[in-house]
Length: 583
Image (cartoon, rainbow, N blue to C red; front, side, top):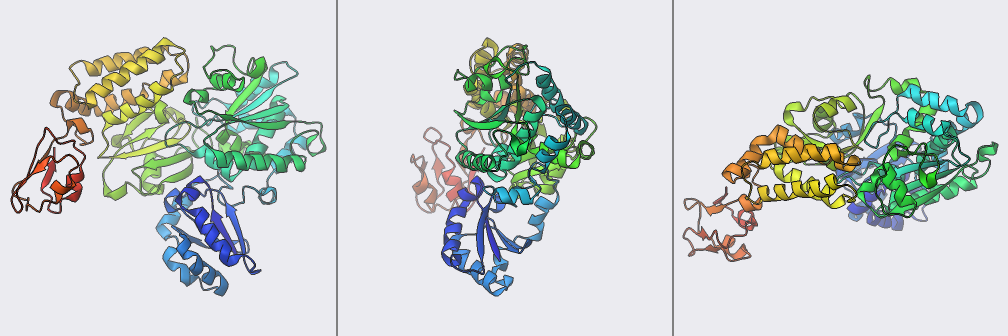
C-alpha cells in the first residue's frame, strides 16, 4: 500500500506536514508500506488530503486529515479494511469537483511526486521535447501552436504562436525565453500550484518554446513569496541537467539551452512584460513604451519572448497530442482549457480547469457547489484587480475572452472571487482600488494620480461622506485613466469601479443619498440598537462590549449609546435572543 500526502502550500498550511510526520513515525521501517508526497490536487476546501494507493490504483482518498488520524490510516492500510477510515473518506458529492473538470495544464498536479523526474517521465514527461528535437523544425513547432489556438494565459489572450514567430524572425545571436510567474492578483494561485506540483512540465514547455524561437537561455521570474515553488523548480532543474535535459546538446542534439530563476520582490506592476524585463535587468520595475516590442528589443536589448506559467504548461501536451485536439476544446475565439482559482464565498474553493465555453454558472454552482452558508449569490470578480464584477443576472455568461470582455470584466490570469449578498460592492471596488493605487509604479500621471483620486472618492463614500456628483466624477476619472495610462495596470485599474457602477449603481446611490450600506458591511454607515421587546437584560452584551457603550439594569432592556458604539458587532455575536438590530 502506498500512502501519498498532498503537500502543496495549501496542504501544508492546513496541517499536512504534521500529518506526514505522524504517518512517518508509524510507517517507517515497515516494508509493506511506502509513504510519499505530491503537490496540490486543487481541492483546497478538503485539505489536508491523503491518498491510499493499491499499486497504481487509487484505493481511497482521505480528506480533512489530522495527525490524530494517523493510527486509523495505518490500521486500514495494514489490514486492508478501509472501513476504518470511512469517517475521513471523501464524499461522492465532493468528488464531483474534479469529475467536472478537463485537465491539461493541471494534468499531473496532485498525482505525481513533483521532486521526482522518474514520476514525470512515467507520465509521458519529456516525450513532447523528444518529438520536437528529433522530428520537427522550429517553424513546425510554431505552426503546431498556431493550429492549437493557444493564447497567452496571463490575461491578454494574445496568440502564442504570433509572439513566438516574431521572436523567431528577429535576427540576433542571443535570444531569451522568459516565464512570467509573477502572480500578483489577490486570490490567484494557479501558477504557484503548477510550479509546486509539476515543475518539469514548466521546464519541458519552456524548452520547446526556446527551441522554437532560437533562445539559448531561459529565465523564470517568480515571486519570492513562493518558496516551495522555487525549491521544487530548483530541484527539477538540477535533475534535468543531470539527465541532459538542460544545458549543452540536449538529448544528444545540437540544441543547447539552460535555465535560471529570478526571485522577484513582489511588485504587481512587474506582471507587465516590459516592467518585468526592467526588473530582470536590475532596474526599478516600470513599463517601457511599446513599440519596440520585447520580441524585437527585450531583455538586455535582445529579442525576448515572455509567456506565463499556464501557457507553457499546455505546450508539451499540445506537442504530444496535436494542436487540432487542443483546438477542438473551447469556443471559436478561445481554444483549449483555462485554469481558475475559485475563491471567496464558495462552498468548494480550489483550482478549476475547464474547457473554454463553459458558463460561470457551470463553475460556481456546478463544480464549486454554490454559495457558502446557503446565502444568495451576488457577483463574481473576474481578472483580479484589473478585472470587473459580474452580477447574478449574467451567471450564464460563457467563459471566453470575448464574452467576458463584453461584461466589462476580463479573463485575466484566472482569479475568480465569488461574492454573496453580504458583500458591499462599493467596498469591493475600494478594496481593489486600494491595491492598484498602492501598486502603481508612478511612471505616468494618469495612473499615479488618477487611481489615487478614485481611491479617495470611494473612501469618502464608504465612510458616509459621499456627495452628489461623486458617481459621475468616478466615471469621468475612469475614462481618463483608461485612455491615458501607459501600461495594462492603469488601463484596467478602473474596471472594478466601472462594473460595480454599471451593475450596482443603486448601492452607490444608497451610500451617498441615504448614508446606508445595503449589505451592512461599511462600518461607518451602520447603526446598532436594542429591541426592547426582545431584550431580557442578561447583561452579556454589556460585558462583551469593548468600549462600554451598552448600559442597563439586569433583567431590564438595555440601550446602546450611539456616540460610544464602534460598531464592532461583538454584541450581536453574543446576544442569544436576537435583540440587537443592525441597520
